[in-house]
Length: 379
Image: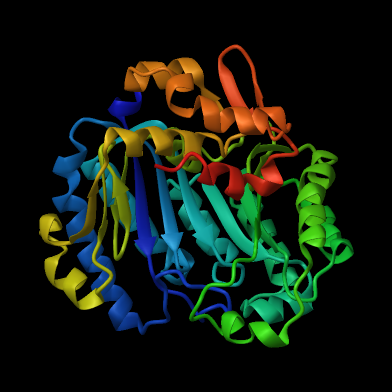
């Protein structure tokens, strides 16, 4: 299917039980009445924006947050059912739900699976009690194991877990322990992200009193991700993501390969192919304007050709397979070497990138310093 004929949907559920110490996402606790008002507004937006999707085929749907599983399973299924009623959802579409251990029972997982969800993404972050407490997580590792067991019994096969590293007080040994524990659980996908201190979060406020891993330890932890997880059958397909064969996250891969997406819900971002925008972050405004999507749009950015070429490189180079030089020329009518040849040559000479007949990609040496490399492909 042509990229322009495809569409992904992101549905934002901003609620959580308690804000984590590192989190700067658009999320917050809310009373049941407020959650109900929001979901009703979300349904109005879903129906009102169906016209924007047209006859494009929806290949993936991602419910993110916040903690979507704060909502009852029945409500999540109702939202998904409405989406399928108004959008052209492919029969084999990947439909992911982010879940926080401890917020869903086995009975809830059964309802979600029967209701059409076919992929779960658990926010685990660590298997160690002290690290979970530091991060402000509401669950234990035992809660995660119990939730995982319930999900599998309910029929979920495609299950991912998130881990974080470079945490205060963490070393390679303790992170390796989490990797080994999670790698042995017969999951299909693992995401491993380094902690980023975001201004305004509790962890940021405590930064001067905490001891963080050195750059050398950080690099070692990153290398351990690929080395340890490969022993359990996982391969790295993106900077921070590891799959069992055939289980790469189709939704996120769509982001990295330029598939247009529609963001539904408070603060959700959208990409049309030549334009980016997001919904208002004001709950009052969202509740009032949900049925009039044009009034929700903020931060509208029309992409120039230069922007589009840079995005193609910056997002595509996140993938282990890199980017296609032929596809670059097809999309933009320009030769890759004319635009980015000089930038690429610096990293090809130093071994941070490699080039085949049609593809250019980061090497194992380049992945740990990808942020520095990708900056050279910005407009």
